[in-house]
Length: 282
Figure 1 (tube, rainbow, N blue to C red):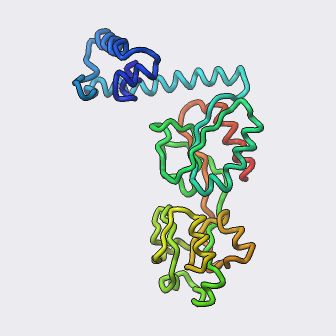
Figure 2 (figure 1 turned 60 degrees about the vertical axis):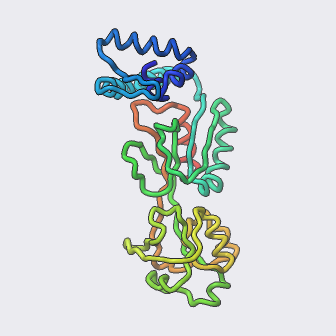
Figure 3 (figure 1 turned 30 degrees about the vertical axis):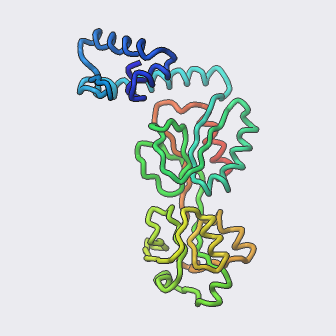
């Protein structure tokens, strides 16, 4: 109960999580403090705050509760097929174009596993927001998570024939400075494009979108040069709606990773999903 109250920020929230009344929640926390002989929380009419002892106790308690949950999960997994609910977060464009069809296949293969998927370009905190798994494009930055590589995606510099008819195609990356570039604001550094050898080129343009598919659409309309993942621009390239530029300076692929919180035990429902995606995306 103490952990639930801290997690939710109130006795009412902790009580709701564990299916009891706020009064009972308060009594249980008070009983814990009496047993320990130390105050864990400062209570006011407006807020709860942890004492120094309470903060230290809570940090260790979270580890113990996580180990307890993992142990329960491990025992259940030995006795039954994978089942339960998996919460997943994935980038909007990659998620809808590449991931969604695979998740549908997975759902058909594993009828006892429920999927709760959030497609968003926001970088969520898996632990704080209760996600089991994240699919992310690019070099993993969060060292607190375990990362398993699923596949690579290439990056393409593209422009429509109508744009290239008005503007000579750039032959080297620095020549992009003279062009109207379509900026994808989901990049970690949207104003710079990186090419082979780690060369970084500053780009500018009057159009900026937080979606790769929209950037490709703008390029198809002849509005400028876009820098797009191949899984987004590939169909347009094959159909001739855009042309690939600066191919000798290909920056190389970006990795796509499945990321999940570190721990001694990975729930079977998450493990089979990661294995499934790795096989299908390899």
